[in-house]
Length: 428
Image (cartoon, rainbow, N blue to C red; front, side, top):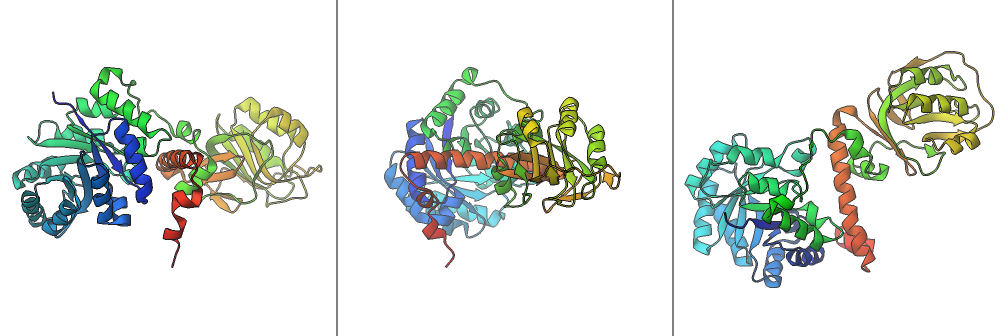
């Protein structure tokens, strides 16, 4: 069996950052360097040209995702220094044929990306006949976020074609060796390397894993990796970023400081000072739930206190969010319980019993339905619609990974404005 190729995908916007990450990835054992689509769109053919000049002994992959004018775009990438040019597998056959002709003229290989192809096996066979050199079993980032797997796509292609097969989409030191076992000749890794604080070490771990699969960590059951587990690893700002700055409650303060809560919402609608429904909701909540209470934003009468908190702890409730006020905060802080509210006041209301449990409520300006996911920490509280919970959890994890690399670059002496290249991307 030939040694699998490790290709690092530089899906960044800034060329200087991409160059430094590429240096570290090569140091860790990467074989091919990909100018990712975002990098090409941001920097143009200069990205390919400069990568080729920096790494003359390494194949440069231009992820053009060619959809039209096949020969022209292949020529452009080849003249800039690419050894491999990527086309979209679902482009028209005329485009593929022209790209193949261009690749023949300029001595480069053509890689066809199967992203979003409806019948990947049939199309891969057609592409092989048309003259494509490499098939890429690629599941895109947005598809990964809803649970689609590049390994499942690769499995369909096993033995279906006689040309090289690459695989891309969410691979790391755990899944990359599985890709090799399923027949991948080229393993394409992006974020697991490029977003790492230690790029060289991350690349080295993946290099070792695909060269010696027995050394790889045991495979994890992604289906069994629950939403709660993933959300426990990310912050409320990570989640807000993943939701495009949506979902954050306004005015909800962590009254016990450094605490974290993750759970599905059990809701209660009450009225200023009426604490009956909020307390009754404790008995309706399941273990691990978060109580979300609309108390009309009252800041003069408390609807919650120590005894209600003790009841939550005994029931295994993960936390409480109140659009209103609480009291007994000195005792509650000793319990270190995740409690979020607008204000603290000493006077309590009365249990009148108005309101409803497990209805749609508004809390901190956000609509919350029973079963929506709630995450709270010192930065605040965010609401995730239940039907998008797995997707948003995965996206938030990607946000956290991106921040790890930015944090490392700042530690090396850069600044956030330089890393983000703010001047270049300011609106003109």
